Image (cartoon, rainbow, N blue to C red; front, side, top):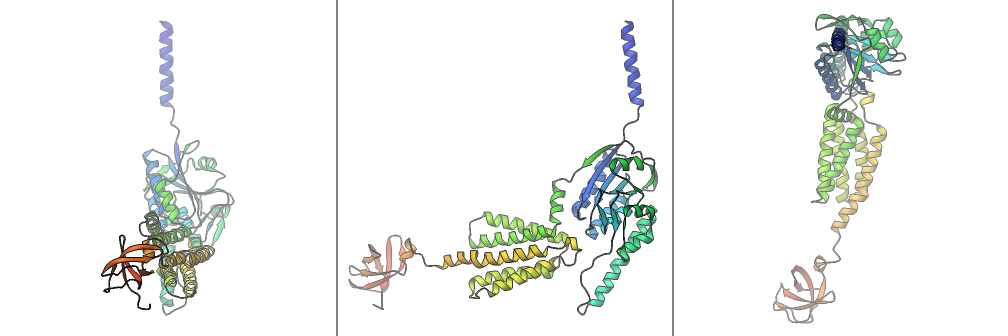
Length: 435
């Protein structure tokens, strides 16, 4: 009896101790690498939502980006500013950078950190156009407008988070860029951390403002939960790659042309339609230059025209040039990392020219060639009437006797005839005048 009471008291003591022990904090971690795109927006918004629902202490965004789309950047900064939990932006791993749009995301974070040998900067907006043409003054005015708007945004974020507004302005106007240690010294970033564990230890106890309230971070020894991109986000991330968009567009054009050239094949048409729609979706994400898209359409038109007109390859050569120029212009209004590869454009243009010149051309020539076997081969064949055709009788054509019907009156036996039509096993013939 005493033993039972002792065991019961021991269990109660252990339960009280477990209940009084503090719960281990939890931190969610996202890894954002590459171009900032609509996929990145969905990924970060989902990360904030799931971390908040799980009662996480904070959300860490490991960032390594050359920049990205301004619209996506705006959505991400808004999501961070409205986040119900602290968002820590950590430029990592070693060798990573927060360029262009990454600068704004770093400034928007509740707490910003960088790993050694990383850098931040070069946030100058890239705008399409130059000083050529009658609207060059309008283009320069619009460039100034975009730049001033970016400066105002970085200054607003700097004041909100207590960061260096002057350096943020230099990053936009002068494309300034600095390494991690200088970023901490200049109050661009809050701290330097070797790795994720070091970051959580150094962030512990820091006070940040979340929706107007001061929150103390408890991240030392926190449990880390890594969130990966889901299927939809990965698909959008893939479509944000301009070279993928160009390849999909080309496959779509090939598939539809093959289907039109071979009605009933079905599979090429389905694949072509899907690829074409995905390619157009990719180009819509990248906000392409429509002049480039028009040049690609002109290239396809020239390829097809050269199949039916005796252009001796001149139209195909023009199509190759038009395709290359179109592919280059397609994303010319984006930053270098968002432009199509010139090498890829040249390779696709040459392959397309060869495809239309030889493969499709051979198919069309085969379709236009006169049949040599089957009933179709009888039309136009010469023969001899073996009996009077008045109008029915027998003719000898291609080594065989056929029942025939005259289409132009009486044809005496022994007269040369030409087949003009075939109906089942009966030939329709007419007298060969040249005989």
